[in-house]
Image (tube, rainbow, N blue to C red; front, top):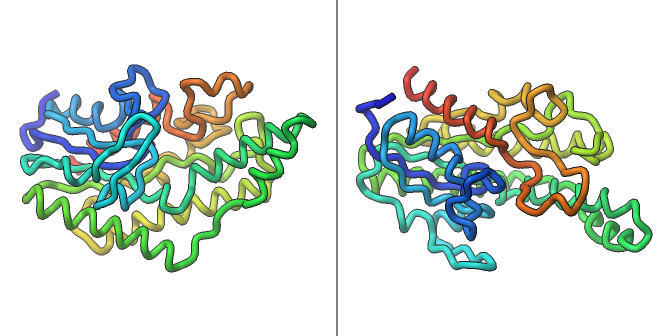
Length: 267
């Protein structure tokens, strides 16, 4: 299907946009999939794509701070934004609040706690619990999303900007399991942290002309523990982590995000 309204899509964001663990991999250093939602969106619209997403990105590394990985140093994502882009997607802010990082750390801690040899490391990893962002931290993340939207509209004049919220990982009915090895109290705190990340998107959308695609709300029935989760959980064995990205979108989640964006564009 071709859509004459959009000819060049550009994507900015972190791992919930880049798609680590989803084959085929387009850029190993960026942990970027060739089947992430930016690729699927551009394909659906019949548009060209500039995918600047990098796993681990923060709002700062999109705006003006280089991002370093083991394999490469990435310039600020806005530096690569083409002026001809007429549709720009943004998924960022979760790493500012240590959302998935905390979830992954605590899941590792839970798995390591069962072995006497690794129990000290488990205690170390779990010493800092689930983050509780302060109002100032939430405001800073929202303000930085606003800065990104404003910078995009200056560089790519006339482009439609879309803020794409994070998929729900821990939902209302998610319970303790092998995939989510957290006690009920931790699950509740992680759920609230996800709500806070979503609040950042709502605040930024309210202060800009950007279109909001509320993926946390739209994916609420596809969290871990549901019949059809759109995200991955902790694998059964730690050795299965190679090539896996726990608590990140699966291929079906990426398809759902791309479809939700198209629906929002055409409302």
